[in-house]
Length: 95
Image (cartoon, rainbow, N blue to C red):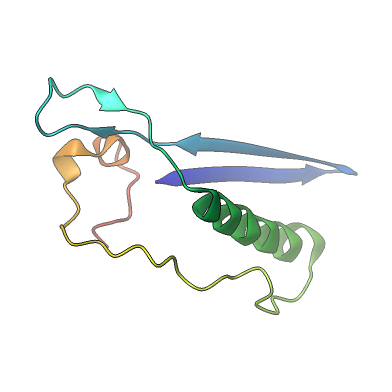
């Protein structure tokens, strides 16, 4: 899970990003940093750009920055006990 916080003040904007980690089910429970494919990073940034244009500049959402969902197929359910975002009460995977 990746969370972005962005804001526009006068003519300058700021974007903060946090990638939450996941614990290994077989290890000592230590959280590991996530890895992202180039395609996943591009999709995240395109969605972020679309939200910034809409919320900070009032541009209409024309779908240009809303790529189709990733082709990743998840075969296992979300394990809240291994999710750092869940442990902090901000994960939305179970919704």
